[in-house]
Length: 342
Image: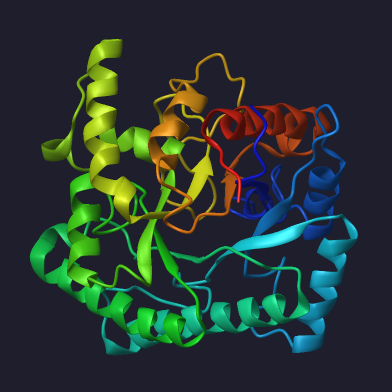
């Protein structure tokens, strides 16, 4: 069945995350990422838009309104819209740890405000009609374990302050669950954090198929593992239901992805779920079926688009046009199986 929603987006940050100048995986420009996305097509269907990482060299978080509007014009020229935005919340960008000292937490909130400002300009331009601001705790798991309850409370307080800023811009924040982020590194800790924040109208969850697969296996949180190696299909789907039932009510942003069961990291990015091509023979996920679990009730939660995340794909893969056609076909399959109309 053909559906008009959700809109199909491609992520731009795979051109940046884990990429380092002077190596065999240098950053790929926004212009190049847009070009590859704009050229992708499957039986006349194209991508509807892109999700952006608001940091150099793609986007200066302090760019002038004129510069942001020029970027919007560039994106629109490819026939694309803008959806969700990744706030530059990490140490070394604009932000700092959400469970750090007062100065660090202020920097985190400032990064969210800068993202909201850019989002507002993009909305006023007309290129952005939906989407959220994506965040995480911007700190690793090792120090979180020193005081789980106290550190979760610190992160929650920071998220609450960021939520007040976001609400003033009519934005929502989606906290990304990854095994590398403190207080967000297991499905149970993620639920606990969202409940502690307690801003359901403004702060929700951003689910990624690759990252949430590792939630099932208990990486960085063995006590919350729902599966053991050698699991059966029956055991997998039973565990998947437990996890998605817990997190789906919070889910306001969604990434389609594949995972081969391993962790991976390049550059300064901590090791997390390995994203694989949609047709990777080692992929562990039935992408379409798994996506359906997360997209139940998505329309009612305000989701209008889904995004493919190819984070830390090799440059040769990213620069191969067929990669994006194959991914687009998978995105279309997800929409046909779990989509909806206005």
